[in-house]
Length: 92
Image: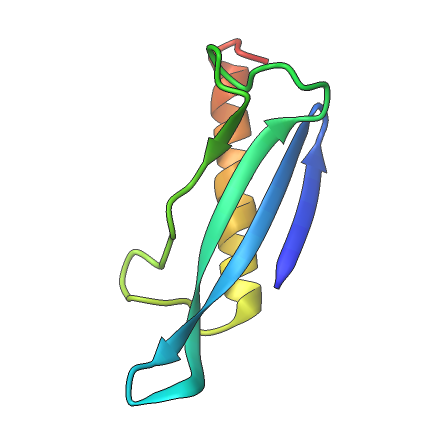
């Protein structure tokens, strides 16, 4: 439940995290997602920070993504949004 994406010189690492049914702990009922964005040249992504981490993310209207694909897609979009903001601010 992992995806990597590259938008040179940035690397996005995306992890879907299972959310389990409290009544049936073996049953996966959805996913949250965690993302790390770093530069492949090991320079800071902004200021002195070598990477940017998300907290566990879930959909705006809900407590979980229903599929791994939804979670990974959202995480990748978040990472690319961060990169776009840094480029716009001239932090590339």
